[in-house]
Image (cartoon, rainbow, N blue to C red; front, side):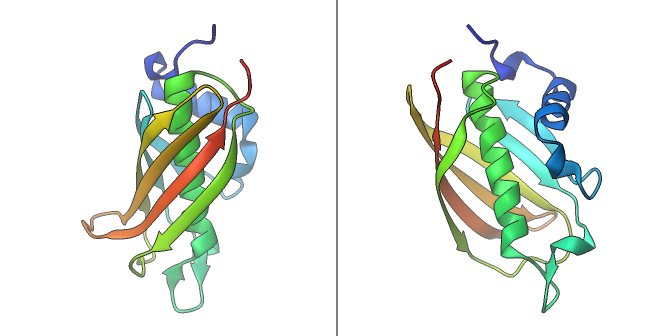
Length: 144
């Protein structure tokens, strides 16, 4: 039986991501897990110029990356270290033009089964209460 991530420290989660997903650190210390629980996560994506699109707003792909990584971490908080869990469906609604600053993703799972998990994430510009995007996603869970 795999250990539950909810009992791991934030440093342990960071070490796992650095080891198994080094590509999320290509622009430096962008992603940081703020909280993790059983099927929940709060993650911060620091602002970087590479995230901008014309018009001076954070790009859709940057917001999608934040939501996907945060939902993955939230899932690991419930099922433990299962690196091969993968996104099988992802839908995003862009609600508001985000300012060029850090984004926060809050995630929770609606259902976690043996082979599939369905979760949602709401993204906010740091310091703003109005959401900038809402995501629903499904992840496939391999036998573990």
